[in-house]
Amino acid sequence: MDWYLRERPEWSKKGWMPIADDGCGDVFILATSLLIPSTGTHPVFFLDQAEDAPTYVVASGVWRFLFFFLENERFYQRKQLSYWPFDKEKVVAIDPKIVECKGIPLPWEANDQH
Image (tube, rainbow, N blue to C red; front, side, top):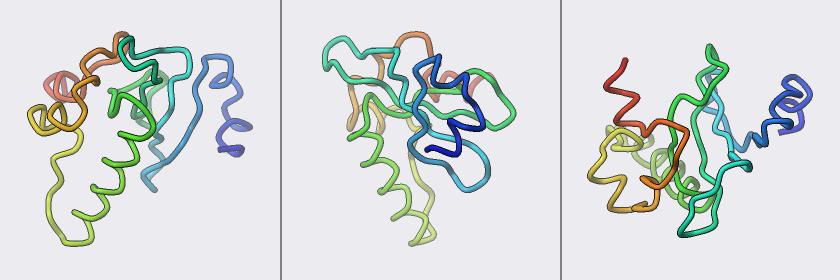
């Protein structure tokens, strides 16, 4: 976290707190300047290393993100494809509040654009 914030001091000004990366240069960021209205949690988004703006939201808060992130690792270890974050039906079933995030595309919407 410290390394990212030293390298990208503008992230602090935006209220972005890096909480994980994918090992390929892409970062998962807690958006402390945004709020999910019904839960009071801050959404987590994916930031592609080639972009300066959030690519898509991945969870309605840190706890949901950790669940998805760790479950995704379990799928990877079993050499299975994961549903997260692009399978709308499965993601919303586990994290229904993700759809309340405004200002950052939902993954299935962003995926349609690419």
